[in-house]
Length: 85
Image 1: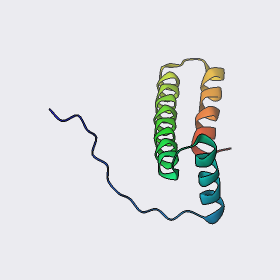
Image 2 (image 1 turned 30 degrees about the horizontal axis):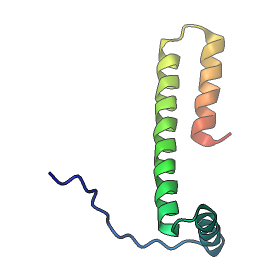
Image 3 (image 1 turned 180 degrees about the horizontal axis):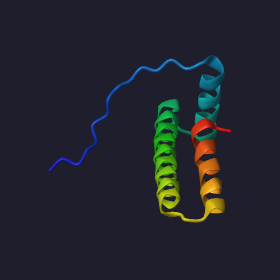
């Protein structure tokens, strides 16, 4: 059984400043810019999943809460997560 992960070549255009930061990070870690981009994308996707999980947990707590003060606090936290305010 072959356990090798198939890679797909993907072309991405980055703003110059961001590309410079990626190359600089790659040099400092002694790896390729491609590896840095893969790591950053993986980290970003994991962070997005954690944020979604946190949002759903807060929404569930809001639905179960009978305390008006807690409901208000949870609504405000959900609004911050949604609208960044």
